[in-house]
Image 1 (cartoon, rainbow, N blue to C red):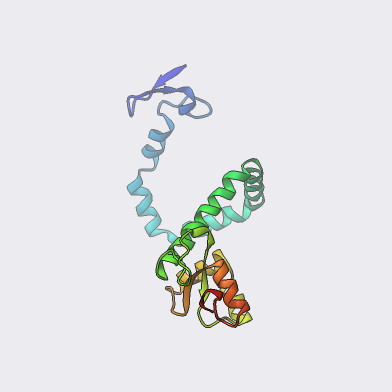
Image 2: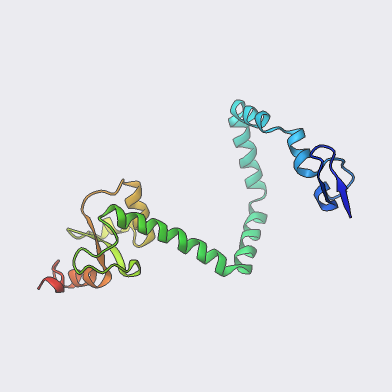
Length: 173
């Protein structure tokens, strides 16, 4: 069964008119009628601290339920969550590779992004490695530091070859 909204003039299913379905306006029109966007922006600009306190209060009151909901979603859609994280990590990695000279190994010329990584030109101490991280955390750290000098793009073979040959890649021997 359908109903016509007097505000927008559209004929919509009853579900668009709320749970009780007795409202005359559809939900989108009702929301903009009660709280127009300009009013919301103005109120938020004048009450930032109050809005922040309300948001934090809501968060702490509903934290367990929200975490349960997120866990159920991740359990129901494991592939979707993993794909999203993977795509985000790949974007960050590609940006780091491009910042350091493009998506090719500086030693052997490998261009498959799946094989490429960032290498410390002068090596790295364990404390530095712990601070910077590995993989996606390293790429995020590099981005936050505005891609500092001292790094280069290498494939995993060249990177490990340098690590095991006192800084000299086996290709260069």
